[in-house]
Length: 605
Image (cartoon, rainbow, N blue to C red; front, side, top):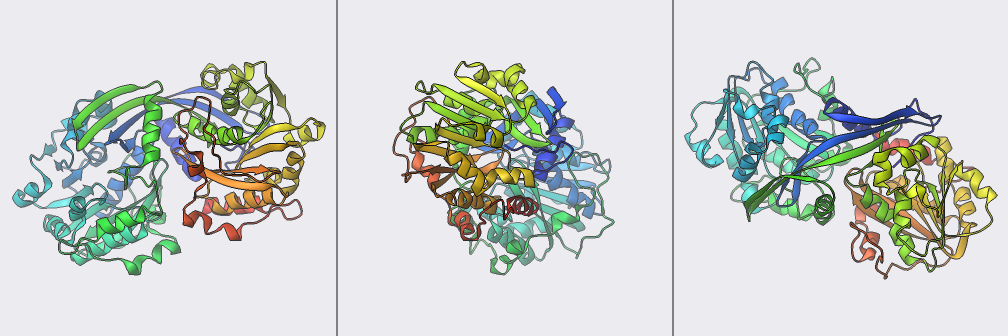
């Protein structure tokens, strides 16, 4: 959802770059590649395979390697020997695939926690291809029965134990994170062995994360903790545990083929101060005092949608269910569907068309509709008249597609500086199909021009102005988010008109988000803020602005749509932690231009 004016630089989220590198190493088709004076353009098509358990996303093929490489390889780096390995969970064989890269591995015992997922993986050829037929390796032995039966009967110790557990969202699952369970695992660990366990997100659930760490220590294990950002799921935490003391050493490096590990893993073992500050509050989780599922449940009050690629989500995430329904209502292949009422499994394959501008993700066809419906329809459903529409940016044509759903729209001016974007939207079949040939509609006038130049040339006002411009990543783009720029746009609004501006993420870049809102307020307009979850980008924010007071939308969206809630007013509700930084936002003006600096600081953070 952002571009750059300098095609030789990368200005975006570093995890966009990591994800792009993953996609280029996997099967893909380049639909278009080129350069304009403003940016590098790369249009990709990939297959996206997703596993859902009880309608919750467990993993997707776009970035599962990042997670599973992070789960497996640090433990192998720290272990002196890894001849015998135990894997708990990992029913799809994706961690097993990583383990079998080590020629020194002689035996792997695998214990399933979800038999239905294991059956689904065995019956799905696409998963066999992903796990590189790891189930058929003669070093692998599948345990019959549950994990407790295995721990009672197994006699030989293991050099590495990998526990890929579900999130501790229930009392029963919380027992897998208890002091007593960790002691049983410790009894099966060699003296020099390493246990690795997936954990909660230290970013979103630091108290749960540190409580798992403290519980491991209560089982007489020494620990090291690390985390990695998996683009589709966010920050994922892990714990290493061993009977003997161990520490990070610079010389420790992985020496097997991988697609995502940094050369030096040290950065994974450092945590921000806000995460470390919670550590003292951690509690031990034991069978006599099962705290963890309660802590986990309470954390969902502030984090409505935190996902973990190794297990179920904290809560029945309505945004994720909405996304699944969206995918199922569009072209897809259902590779597997089955299971019990308590353990329902779906595996589906979709084609994902992705546009990268300067190696930063602009859109994914899997969920661009979520973003563009949220961008367009609140404003158009609230405005009294919508005959004339101005769209600044949005050269991909998706916002136009949504606007053209309204029969009373008579004229749309699209203003985009980059001729290559306009060419893509008009002439590349996969893109023009996605935007429903919006740029060919007779109501649309396309202007390949700087929006600042265009607005000076206009005198006839607009009923709605949609600002879908690049993120303020440099000084030039920062000028498009100033009080002065917004004031010039407000002069082009009718008295009852509404302006809507995409404003980055109130979750990941809250200072940027609220500063854009404050800059809109600096024009004298009335402003209302809202947001929605877009899986490819996380929580994404927008601001509405109008010359007259704005009231929460009470009208329903009267045109076809797939992803918006029935009650649009729910989009205008923010968790307290999102709003907590609002008072420290910065009004961006030409004389005090700082938004691009704030943007860079927040991306680094």
